[in-house]
Structures are given as C-alpha cells and as structure tokens.
Image (cartoon, rainbow, N blue to C red; front, side):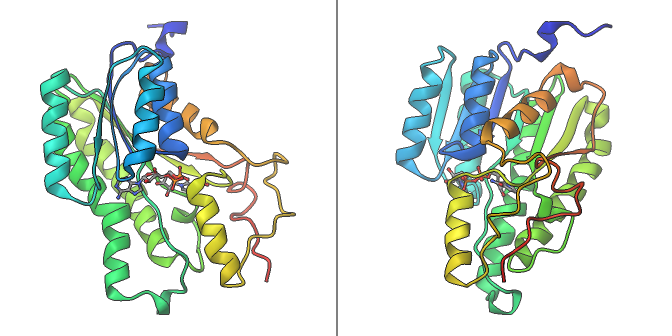
Length: 265
Ligand SMILES: NC(=O)c1ccc[n+]([C@@H]2O[C@H](COP(=O)([O-])OP(=O)(O)OC[C@H]3O[C@@H](n4cnc5c(N)ncnc54)[C@H](O)[C@@H]3O)[C@@H](O)[C@H]2O)c1
C-alpha cells in the first residue's frame, strides 16, 4: 500500500508518554496531540505536569495526566489501570523519562547506582510489561536512549550502561513482539538543550568538567526538543510501519562525527 499524507497522523491513537513535564517528553506529547493522538501522560513534578496537561488540553485532544515516579511499580500499575479504563487500549508507548547525575564511576555509591538502574532501565521494562497486554491490535514502542549508549561516557558510566542496555532491549523486544505487530525502536539524542541538560551542565561546571561550548554538532547548531519529538512521531506513526529494532540518532551529526561533544579540560 502506498503511503499517504495521512500516514503521519495519529488520529485517535492512544499514546502513553512518560516524563512530560518538560523537554523531549513535553514536546512529544504536544506534537502527538497536534497530530490527533489521545494522550496518557505522567511526570513526578506536579507543577510542570499540570502546565503540560493544560497545554495538551488546549490542543483539543483528550489527556489523562498522573503525577507519579515511574520507578514506583504500584503507581505505574494504577496509572495503566486508569489508562485502560479511560481509553480501553494503548497504541503507542514513549519511554521518555530518564536522567542521571554527573559523577566519576568510583564516586557512585551502590545506592546511587541502584537509583540510576531503576531510573533508566527497570522502569522501562516494567512499563513494557504493563503496556503490551493493552496493545491487542499491535502498536509502537519508542525508547529514549542516548548517544552515550553507543560510546564511552566519563562521568556517566551507569547511565550510559543502562541506555546501552535499553538499546539492546529494543532490538530483542522488536523480535519478541514482532508477531504481535508491536514495533520497538529507539531514539538516541544528543546536543538537545533542555532543563535536564542544563542541570547536568551545572553539575559538570561545578566539577570542572564543562562541555566545550565552542564545539557545535556538524550541522553547526544545537537541536531542540521538537527535533526529537519529530523522530518520535515518525516512529509512532504508520510512516515507519516496516521499521523495528533500530535506533535513530537525533544529534546534528555528533554520532557520525565520532561521538560526544568534547569536554573542556
Ligand atoms: N537532552 C538531551 O540532549 C538528551 C541526550 C541524551 C538522552 N536524552 C534522553 O531523553 C530523555 C528526555 O530527556 P530531556 O533532556 O527532555 O530530560 P529533562 O530532564 O529535561 O525532562 C525529563 C522529564 O521527565 C521527568 N522524569 C524524570 N525521571 C522521572 C521519573 N522517575 N518519574 C517520572 N518522571 C520523571 C522529569 O520530571 C522531567 O519532566 C531522557 O530519557 C534522557 O536520558 C536526552
């Protein structure tokens, strides 16, 4: 079947997106709503979640919003129960919530490590287990990884390892869930200034390990959360109907250039 302009639309599809209070998650929720989706969103920050909920509602599309920490399995189960009650099924899951702190590996305590594993990996496996039974007609899962899933990342060892695990999980789930007509793909962003990125830069500055602001991605400028949201829309929509188990790098060419922005030392 040829692709039509409507292939990019998500008309009435139910999209669950985690971490929509700011950054990539918020941009994705707003873009998906503008392309017709019905949204189910969550974030652990009540105030920014409330603002995002209002902005999504202003598009005229339905939105169910819950304040929760995705590492809390019981809260996620309750959320997905509400989603099933409200919409009946799920078509798209965007595992966007994630993050890290800056610390050399030897300074990361076992407790800190456990928090990073939960924040960037176990919460995703938990969400996938909960959502797949709600996708009886197939669907699309989009996992936010990172350029750091694909290269060494000093100061971010556990985060990078968990994002690499997520990239590998993406490939395996693509094969296991293919027969259910569920596609599973990843997006590896870099050079996208967001609140999370700003927080990290502050931590790195404090530790004397700042990014070199003079080093721009090959495209010559930084990206935006909307650029990542556009890739998420593509992977959620029928335009990517034959794509599964892969990663799109949204980084202005940084990965092609051999990796990460250089750190000023
Ligand atoms: N910005 C970048 O350049 C970049 C680069 C590589 C990877 N990423 C990945 O993209 C995703 C989004 O990044 P961002 O820059 O928009 O982040 P961000 O920190 O700006 O926003 C993340 C949002 O998710 C929420 N969140 C985080 N952990 C949560 C949890 N445990 N429970 C509920 N809500 C939670 C936060 O409250 C926040 O609203 C993340 O997975 C991040 O690792 C971003």
